[in-house]
Image 1 (cartoon, rainbow, N blue to C red):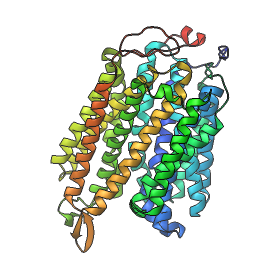
Image 2: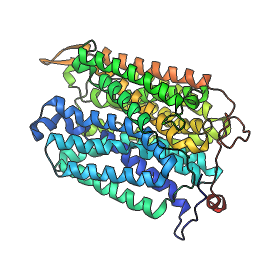
Image 3: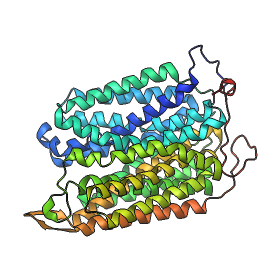
Image 4: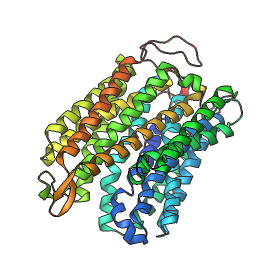
Length: 492
């Protein structure tokens, strides 16, 4: 491990968390940035609807692959350095999309934007390394919630841009935000002195990438290709075979990409399972709300709302997540992050019960969606604390990257399930095929089941702290924090 850094005269510890949270929100916005544009992409670019769909799929794939990889790279080579590289790639991808109308170049630019999802676990790790112990829990709670905050805020903002400006404008705006992020990090965020020793696991990285790409391609494209089609089954088989071989290699190498022995600990494994389930339940709220309120009134339940209105329905939930992230931190400090996760999952399930019985009135739809978002804020804010109390301090980047990956996998599974349900439960309304109300209600029930499963996983978590690298005993619900000397001296 390298020696602790000497802070520069311009160190601004009070601004570290706001800057990192802003970076996380910008990255999360990239995940939903093109959703309002998708129906228009074929006409704007002369491409097919299937090709347009790749503007969303590719960000999921690159985000899933690069999040754990860059988290591990941050542990080994410097979290701030890798954070800056990720933000630089996001900016480059935004510029690439802004200067072209070719679908191939757009997909390439979106791939670069998606790879920056690693900013969120890197930010969480920097917070753990740099801040005094009393500021860690509320800060990582806010940083973790940016995944939901950015997604909820980004959709209505992108819709407003698409309806009122040239569509390239939103990519120029995202490029400007990415550049601003880079400058703020250079000015405010210090480099962490903590390092993981060893060599970067290139074979393990390639094996993980191949496994994730095969699995997520099968999940995201299975509905279009057919779940029993040859391409889907081949990808699933490839993911299984490569995944097993990758796992055997990771268990034998001295410096693995993912420490599977640590990941198999109940405290880590159950937290990652909960992350997948919470990601599933959260994404169902966004997908179902945005589409349901846009359904025409002749369906008997649709409100015929515009895409801007549908996006604004999610905005109160995004704002609620900002407000509730410090509440989750206080709950974690008082009762342990396991309790905060369990409460968040329970509130999500309750939100879907509300949604099941209130799907005809706009304000009740917004209320139900906001309740789900409140539960998501509590759950998302607790997940990093659970991870960090169970892994060595030198592995927080990789461990949080893996946890963020599991949320992304949950969202991918949710997208496939929601698409399948809404496509197979239809009726004729006004001469066109539309999902039935029961299809949406079934989506709410499935999402509630995922939230209840996340609750069960949280209740099965061991209540006592698992010692990390520091090895000091800790109370249940505490987070081990190894501080740099400068951070310990800086008062809040």
